Amino acid sequence: MPKLTAATLFKASLALMMLAAGLATLAGYDRMGARFAALGASDAVRVIAGLVQMLAAVALMAPGRAAYGAALALAVSLCATVAHASVLGWDGAPPAMALAAASAVILARNRADFQR
Image (cartoon, rainbow, N blue to C red; front, top):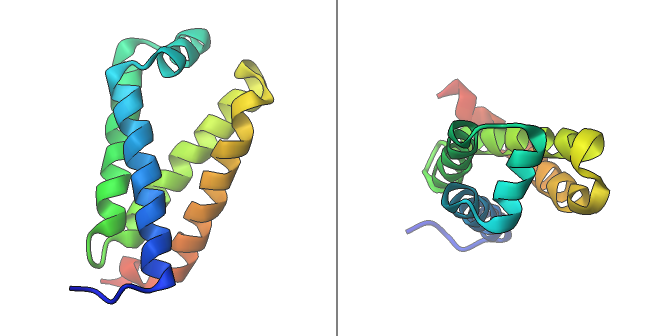
């Protein structure tokens, strides 16, 4: 069992947030479904986005794969930030930017995972 450190808790909290967002996106939760509809995206795009979020959550907690999960989470968060800035309005941009910042920190701390 890995040691319970602040870095592990930080990764676990980001993984939990990405898992929750992925499940909400996959389930078509009212707000998530409405946001994808406002973007003009089909249900297939919404499902793919939800699956990527869930894959990021799993990779964040897999030993030696945190950098890959952080990179996926960073990509999804940056896409969400751009979508909010350009079409959806700034109401949901701060959480997306916070997730992007957290993902960038985890990516920087675990960049050695890419060498394995």
